[in-house]
Image 1 (cartoon, rainbow, N blue to C red):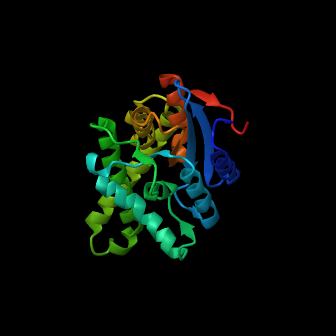
Image 2 (cartoon, rainbow, N blue to C red):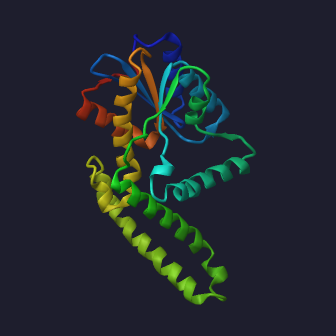
Image 3 (spheres, rainbow, N blue to C red):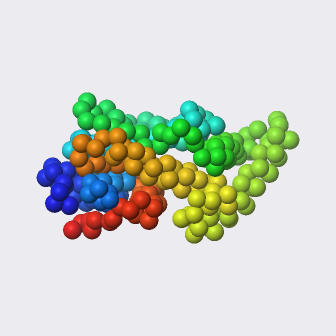
Length: 249
């Protein structure tokens, strides 16, 4: 931790104090470079948002989670059904809820910001996950309006209800899938796990590329949704020789 610039350490300490908005971990690469992991809530209030912006601004090298919608089948549709409710929440709070630190990192005028999930080929399971999650959210939305259109389209209403029940029953498999999430194939049990585990793999591999491509940029920070932090950190440590740095010291 003493290797970090004073401004970066202070900013990370402030983020760590915002427990509802951030999770902070530190790992050291086999080459000795520190990587600060900033797990965030993608929506937060102004104070927490300013802290996140301060964190990324104190690092010359920044890696960010970015779902590659164009490379994933159904990715654009999934992006809409996920980002739509976030946008609605910001509108309903009259802008009190702010956006992601990932966006702040991409807008910085200096240094290097790298999308960690950029790869030549996306995992097959991520395509399946994207299609499944898009269908799930569309059906869940339609199910809310079944009482309204049942009188005029009873057959369609019955079909939506049937599919919604099937999705609900399938959700039971999330329990064993969650406990097996350390394995890449856990998405086969339930595709919801793929949006985490498969992307954890992409981000870990992307971190290696980022450090190799920018050998003189010093220590780095990576920003991702906090649900990714544990799996991403474990992959770096168990598969790629990184070591955990106690934090806070």
